[in-house]
Amino acid sequence: MTIRVKFFASLREQITDPKTEVDGALVKTISDVWKQATDHPMPPHVLCSVNLEHKDATEPVNDGDEVAFFPPITGG
Image (cartoon, rainbow, N blue to C red):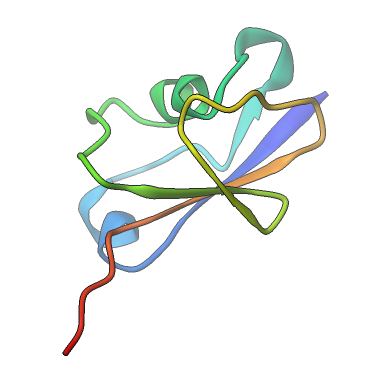
């Protein structure tokens, strides 16, 4: 099975040719998904979600999950 991967906002613009799916058998955590989806190092403070729920990068993932990455959000 596979894990769907999405990058949003500036991450999508910075990462050229990211994979949109990774093999679920090759990953155990959200950070593993990042490593399989792109050659870029994961920036500090990236926000992560699994199946629309915010999670820490050390959280486990399962086959069929959707993992999304967002840049830190600031505002005033």
